[in-house]
Image 1: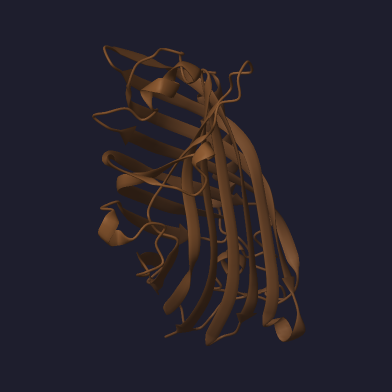
Image 2: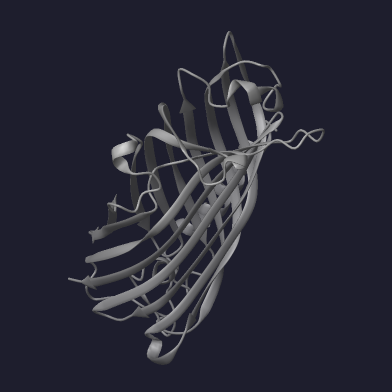
Length: 324
């Protein structure tokens, strides 16, 4: 497992190195926009969760689900001088639990930069408290205001057919794809995740079915991860090159360095992770305006002793933007 991380780094460096050279764009397939800066408004719903699943085969153990207290949002994207900034807020009255009854809060930040053959998207998030739901409880949530969750990382992309396929046009509509085309893409994601509490992440009465099987409180889980996901993206262009549909899919594996802090002791080591990412965007993209509908799902599983830590993010949104 330890050899997997340097292998991923070496492979990605080898893939990225040819991309530093200038790419000759086929202008019959891709068109640059005269106005580079833009403002985009969006609204939608999302689902973010961390599930702990026991791999114990002798007994069926219910999943333990943690999630932030929000399900719908609105926000903006501001693109200025090749830097893209994001910001959003949860819509009132559409939370899983009434905000007056829970002090669980979530904050997130994104930053991206793309060239024709490569790109990077950075992300960071903080959860002050989480909602806990055990599978046998149905849709009942317990507010765990004692918990804190942190995550940060970056997605690095290497696009191979950049002369005919624009990942920028498919992903953020900041170029025009004139003819349908696709590309093989390699994505590498280093990330950091931390969950902690002064109590126990896994309820103590269920702890014998998780991690090392000890009947003790798990106070902290920390993961330093590296994941390699090869994939493919395609942009199907319709009438007059303005209407389009652009699906992309990635799947792969990697390694985590984990640190588990339990009452009176600490466990650390390497473990396997696997994951996939699917995104589909469709809509209208012209020189002045663009409007799209997007669906995204991102899923990663980390295998920690008797437990599987499942991180899932899903988002569906509508977007409208103009260039200036």
